[in-house]
Image 1: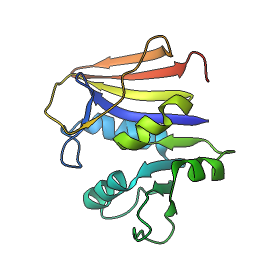
Image 2: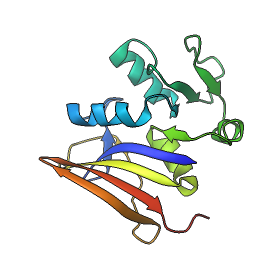
Image 3: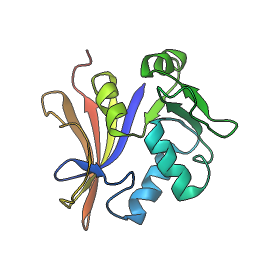
Image 4: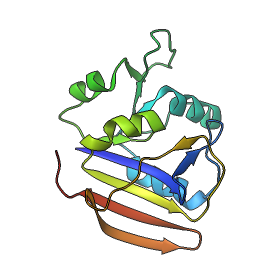
Length: 160
């Protein structure tokens, strides 16, 4: 199963300068709770931003990085694949949580089964965007509304 998790603004912005354009502690805790103990797949920019923020890979998770850079350095325990196809093939019998960035989301979007989206009630300036969520492809199955954001779960209506 492929699951996408992202925080997305009203204008589909998900990042600016390889960082989040907002700080929502509840979202970070939600992300941690959902992905703890899971396999998380990300692009090299997302991995770099996590290292910058935490100083280490995401703890208590199997960290998978997809990059075309054959010289991309990662700490021990982090697994690198040089194409999304290779990564997904190697992980085909596992639940995979896709955590960004934009290029990885775009590539995996047609393959995903579920999405956990934090809808952020802002329209920030950004340089990284999430794909449009089509109501003909995705069905909202739960929503928890909070001040300034909502946790929304989607499932694919008809998987290709």
